[in-house]
Structure formats: C-alpha cells, structure tokens
Image 1 (tube, rainbow, N blue to C red):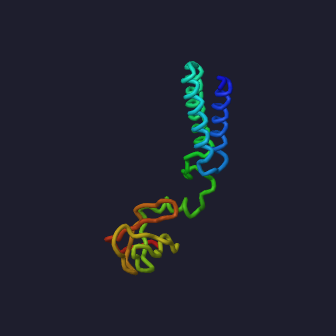
Image 2: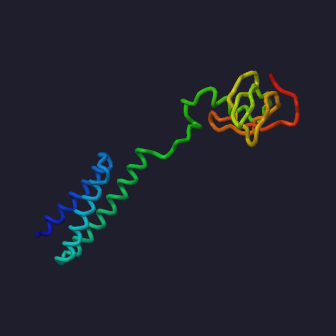
Image 3: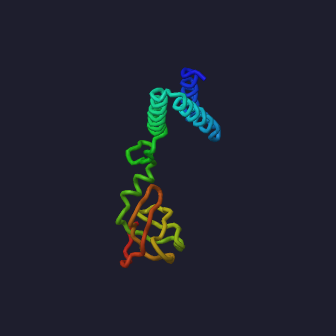
Length: 158
C-alpha cells in the first residue's frame, strides 16, 4: 500500500476521533479510529517510512490533546454558582443565617422544619434527633441545605 494512502487512513482516523466527541456512538467511532490510526502507523513503520509514521503518531497525540482541552473548555467543570445571578433569594439568605438561633417546629430525625428569623425552613440536624420545641443554632449552609445543632440556650429569635 502506498505511503500517502496510509497517511490518509491516519487522517481518516483523526476525523473519526473528532466525530466521536460530537456523535454518541457508544465508542464505535473511537475504536474504529484507533484501529485505522494504529494500522496506518504500523504499516508505515514496517514499509520503512519511519519519519511519516512518527509524524502520524505525533499528530495523533497532539490532536487528541487538542480535542480533550476543547471538550473540557466547552463542557466545563465549573459548577460553582457562588457568583451566579441565578441563585435564588433563599440560598443567598441561608448563607447569612449561620450563627442564628431558632426553634424546632417538628422533630428533626434528622430532617424537619424549624422557625428561624421568623421563617419556617427545612433544616437538617448535624447528628442525632432533636425534639420538637428545642432550641437550635445554624452551623452550616450549603446552598439550600441548612445544618443545625441543638443549642444549650433556650432563647430564640422570632
């Protein structure tokens, strides 16, 4: 087989890798691409075209790195909504509640409802059960999850 045909086979494999990023094929395109690229590089090496084989291998590695970086940039792994305008008022308010005291409206086993700053909120006990009527303090807030613990003091804020 001619060296340029094997080079085209390698380029065809690179195109299939590109398509694998956008077309869900269950890995079929990726496997086909790896077989095409591997076969073309192997045949080029066996036929004595080691420079072309090395060039195809380097091009394949560079292409895969480029596609991986492109995919990470497009998909993005930043899921932090701290700076987002789409955060609801309840989530913003819950961050300001750390340290506030309240009164348990239902038994916390470990989740339930508490009255904090005059509002009925869903809360989660840090550990164990907290009985209805007990005083609590907010110790942590993760988004819409408010974590409380039993307070030693019996004063509450309404």
